[in-house]
Image (cartoon, rainbow, N blue to C red; front, side, top):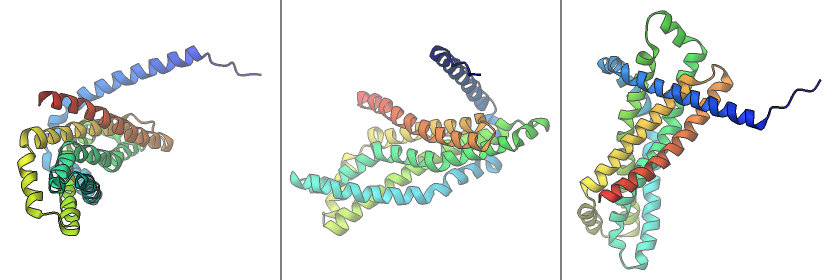
Amino acid sequence: MKTPSVNPIQRRGAWTVDSIWRLGFAARFFFSLLLYSGQSLRRFHGLTMREIYMSGVLSLVIIVVSGLFVGLVLGLQGYETLQRFGSSEALGVLVALSLVRELGPVVAGLLFASRAGTAVTAEIGLMKTTQQLQAMDMMAVNPIARVVAPRFWGGVIAMPLLAALFSAMGVFGGWLIGVVLIGVDGGAFWSQMQSSVDFRFDILNGVIKSVVFGFAVSLIAVFEGYDCTPTAEGISRAITRTVVSSALAILALDFVLTSFMFRGN
């Protein structure tokens, strides 16, 4: 007996209904997260500080090493380009503005999503699979306040710090390749950087971007873990969605924020 084929319109309708339902659940989840965040923040040292360590401190190696190599590459490429126009002393400006405005927050956000975001999704998904979240409900412990909110705020706090470290290591890498190895004048490197990089329009805008990226990545990570199908395959799919959704969200938000920031300048 043949299985009746599903009409493509029916498939599209089912996908649309499922997407709307998931969007509504995500909105309810977000408001519940904000509602119960006070409980986790009141126990900041016991809950949130641990998640800052898990998301931030344990991500330091990949952030520092990646920032150093990005700075080295920027120094090499920037020197080759500026040398053609006789402006090799402006290498510090090129490296600093590239990192502080764009590469620092964006690349650090992508690395944060790949390392810390996936770990949060897998941890919450595994707790759901082993019915630990349901056990908390039975013991009158709200799992959003006890499990989700500390991980969310830990990521939001850790992300700007990681982006700042990434940019600092990138500038150090640019100085290392430009001044120490190639021979660009060190005084010109630092003085032009200090005179050209503005705190409000460059550094502060980069900090705002990193905070927004941390908010988006942390929200996606905790939601995907909380909403995943409680199976091994469901956890793996949730981790994949976390990486893909976070990368797309970072790039889209970067475009939106950059357009507003340049308009404000």
